[in-house]
Structure formats: C-alpha cells, structure tokens
Amino acid sequence: MTRNHPHISRRTALRTVAGAALVSVAGCLNDNGGSGPPGDGTTSPDGNGPLTRVAVEGTTLVVELSEEADVDQVNLIQPNGELFGKRDVAAGAQQVSFEIGTAYAPGEYQVIALKGEETVTEISAEIRPEVQIRDVGLYRNNPDKPWDEVYGDTETDRKKNGEAFVTVENTGSGPDAAVELRFSGDVPNPIENPRGSGIYETEQVVIGPGETTDLFSSSFPFGTETEDGMGCSPDGNSGQFTVIVETRVSGNQVSNTYNVQYTGSDDMTDCEVTIPEA
Image (cartoon, rainbow, N blue to C red):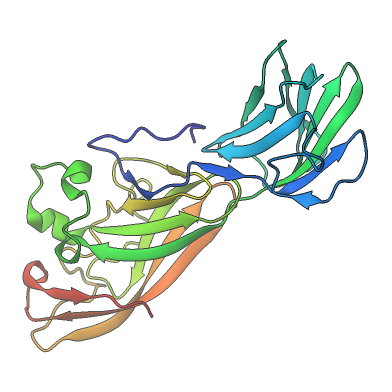
C-alpha cells in the first residue's frame, strides 16, 4: 500500500466525488503539562500556545506552530507508546508533518512539542478511519459517472453495462485504503474471490478522512449470467446481493445488502436493473 494519494488519471480506479482534503484531529491541548479542555485540535486553550493546529491532510498529519513558538522538536507517539517519528523545527518554521500513510495503527496518538528535553505542549489526538458504503450503481443507470475515464473510451457499452461502481465515504479522522471489492448473492456473475483486488486496474484506493470516493469494479458482476448467478426475465427476477469492501487500516469488511430486480429482457445486455437499498 502506498502512503500517498493515488494519482487520478484516465485509467485510474479512483474517482473522488466530494472530498474534504483537510480534517482536524480532535484532542486536548496541554500547556506546560497542564490539563486543557477538550477541543478540535486547532488552537491551544488560551489561544497563545505554540501549537496552533493539528490536522490530517490526506495521508499526512500536519502540525502547525505559532510565530512565537519556542520549540525545536515535535515528536509523534503511537497508541502503543512507541515513537512514530520526530521532526526538528528549524528557526522560523511554522509547520512540520508526519506521513502516516495507510499502514499505521489506529488509535490515540500524542503530539509532543519539545524545547531541548523539556515538554512544552502535548496534544492527545484520535486518528481512526471509518469507511462506509454509501451507494452502488451500474453504467446504464448512471451515465454521468466517469466511465470512459476509468475503463477507456474504446470499451463497449456491453462491457461497461456489466461493471458497477461503489461509493465509499471515510467519516473518520484518519486515512484508510480499500483493498478488495466483491459482489455476492443475486448478481448475474457473483465472484467470491475476484482476480486481483476486484477494483479496476489497481490493488488499492486510498480514502482520506472526510473523502467520498467511487470504486469501479473489475469482476463484471452484472455481465453475462453464470451458472451460479441470477439473470434477467421479461416478467422480472427479484433478489438481494451484497457489496463487500475490505479495508487495510481498520482491517474490516464493510458490507451493504441491496434489493435488486432484473426485468424486461432475456438478455442482461438489454435488462432493466433496479437497485433500491435493502
């Protein structure tokens, strides 16, 4: 897994629908060892502390300092108490950053500002992703999605008709990555173990905190009916299918189940597919 935003290009499997590239980390700011009230991690309790802002931007934890900050080092401590990293603060510098990527341990981190060996200020910050599935759809029902950008304009509508997108949102305070996409149940082509990640032309999609992103399938779930799949019928076939997204940081399998109806044809190419959420 990379520790940077994936490059958005014509052939990428990631499409940011609506992103909040900046998420403040909740925590408490303590001046000189004192106990400060809970805050949003953006300013010190009295407004005059050396740390003015702590936030996660994509896969990076950014720490900003005031102009008057008398600090020469910032340490980041992991939830298990071990040092994640330390950054020297050059004279006049007002920002340091830690690349946390998507291989970090979620939980409560400590951001410690030091002068020499003395602690000047300490922040307790929860960094934890929370990925949820928001939507699922097909090309034939959602032509406004960037299908040509993802699959290429040389792909036929028949090919795109068999693929699907799944919209995921990270409502947490830390980045995560989708590493597998699966469809099971009543779809024409259910594949429990898709080749690769099941996400088109990528092994992972990074989802920053506050970001909403589309994952595009590569397993042809709504393509030609297989022996184990549900097909179309002029009178209608109804069932349920489940979308499963596996994530790396949290190690969870996030899933949603949807009702589905296939009607109007004997052929999936011309089938009308309706997917209200179950």
